[in-house]
Amino acid sequence: MRQTVLNLEESRIREVANAGMGRNDVLAFWFGESDEGTPEVVRQAAIDSLQRGETFYAHNLGLAELREEVAAYTSRLHRPVGSERIAITSGGVNALMLAVQALVDAGDEVVAVTPVWPNLTAQPVIMGARLRCVSLRPQAGGEWTLDLGELLGAITPATRLLVVNAPNNPTGWTLTPHEQRAILEHCRSTGTWILADEVYERLYYEPSASGCAPSFLDQAEPEDRLVVAHSFSKSFLMTGWRLGWLVMPASLTHHMGKLVEFNTSCASVFTQRAGIAALQHADEITPRVVAHLRQCRDTLVPLLQALPGVEVASARGGMYAFFRLPGHGDSLATAKRLVAEAGLGLAPGNAFGDEAQGWLRWCFASKDPQRLVQGVGRLKNWLGL
Image (cartoon, rainbow, N blue to C red; front, side, top):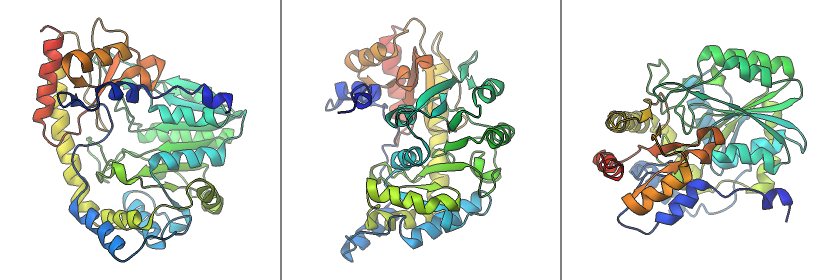
């Protein structure tokens, strides 16, 4: 076994969840998924595919029909994108890992904006890269912001890859178009690739003509050194389906297909049929999901803000409230105590980076917002308020 793999830390989110799984009395908000099932029209498309016997291998890059649908969907939201720039993957995390495998050699320098979902910092390390982290900074009131100058200063000609997730898991921070232009222009000058995890782009609560968060795809030219990772998981309620996609320069697509072959061969056909249905009904599914998540956010955040000393901002994007409890500096210990003593399942902040020690992540994607109210009640009682 490689020492790098032996040294990998297990997910602290899973560590907390494993302590509470199987307990019916726990209100679980630890994972980044809704407790609402996938829309029926999407499930039926998969059922119909299975009934037709579509249980065989597909093209490495995905069904031509799905690639065309993804290209059309992306083009409606951003600049035009052709299907020759699309690869279908077995989930968003697979998309991200494929991109890192394609772009990073052992010894390469990778810069990541943190705190961030731990897979994004673990993947370059698995490939043997040297990881440098540039931290967002918490402001009074719980909002996290980027020091753009610090980030640009960290990206040099020695930097092979920049990894950035916006809207951000866990903080809800989102890049502005100005920041994206500055980052893109700087990376052009240094020859640095950008891997943009934009899986939460549709879960965006600020005014937007396109109905999504600012994207590097709004700024980039087709052959820029930019790879954008997406997933069906969040905006289509499809976490368990394991279906995602990559947008990349056309010159990279064939080689990405080779990597897909050596990782998973292809995404399953019936899952891809479900993806086609999801995209064809996107204008029905996603706005309803976003409106409901906004209601959930606006239910949870004011209740947390009303607790004495709690720091939490209303997320611009994503599905999380990221907050700090006064007097509880060890995130992992606090999260475990909340499971054991309050029946409340949250993710520890330090799972996302050392700079988030003392913070907790609450996924507010709840089918019934009253579960959020009950959860705050448990937290309040645990705090003795």
